[in-house]
Image 1 (cartoon, rainbow, N blue to C red):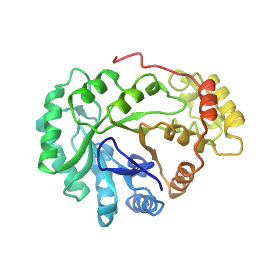
Image 2 (image 1 turned 45 degrees about the vertical axis):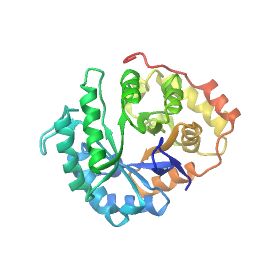
Image 3 (image 1 turned 120 degrees about the vertical axis):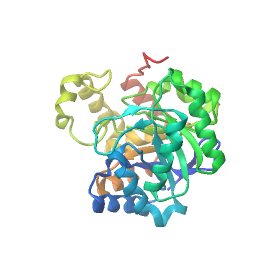
Image 4 (image 1 turned 90 degrees about the vertical axis):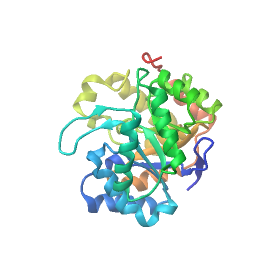
Length: 307
């Protein structure tokens, strides 16, 4: 599989990564999914300490330990939780980050993390202190690089201007084109890569019939699309762009068309899903005309908050 460079780092990641949150809590099945991903050419694995209260990191670490030199391992920090208790609280403090990384390293069975990401963030945070924590961890060799996972434009600008982040994880898809307004060009200018999540918009951009959408989507739609608008745009995408190709292919290739995107992180709860995602990522890229058509059919939304 083709690889792309994350920002100005020396991390070269498969153009599709595995979002590990979806591998579940059955260790045997999770291990099968992770092994299949490696076998199909995926080298970028994204997890977080919060997922299943650390169990996800444990599964990832155990399954990939023997392949550690061949993979790029990313995890996240900032959501403070207690094992066995529901909920979590936001804590981007230096003290917490430097404590939490030790637990992630233990669960992942590794002595370094390739990409350590802040799992959120607001403009009210003590951002300088958070940056200091990541920089110290870099200096100690505990992490190779760091990034943030955020959709807040004001937070993104602060980190790009003040820190040495190499990546930004954010939601991006045909049905969520908000990053196109300013963020993608801003990041490209500063050599910060995007690692996208939500490329198939909760399964809406797959060949699954729209009628099978869950009740909340039927009632409330998706972002600023009503359910009726979703039916119309998905029908048009299938007939006017996809043709005989799977809609998942169109969805992943749309994200990969952007130079700023290093990897599209897609979840998978089965080996079959991974196979379909890999096939979609390895398919023929969309043409400029197809991209223009998709943008005619879909909404060019903007972030209304956190500007």
